Length: 63
Image 1 (tube, rainbow, N blue to C red):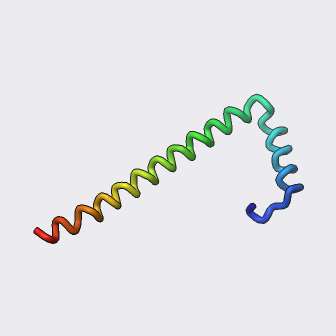
Image 2 (cartoon, one colour):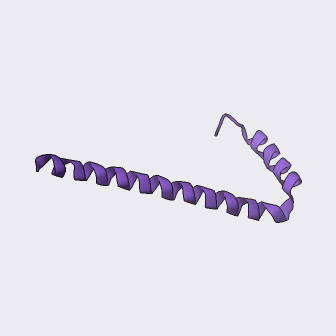
Image 3 (cartoon, rainbow, N blue to C red):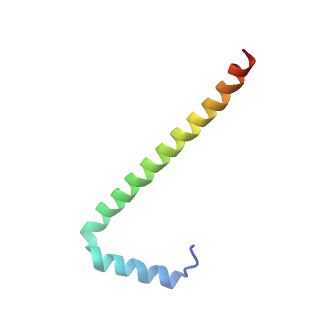
């Protein structure tokens, strides 16, 4: 995962816990989750619009 070993990941997690504290981490993760969800929603919307545009285009050309 990103070229990091298990020991390095554990050190990073410990630093995050020390910086933000145990009470702030759930709030931080909720914010990250919301951001990921919004990104995926926007990505899916764009994909559906592109597919819809591709489906509509042949019908316009045949008329």
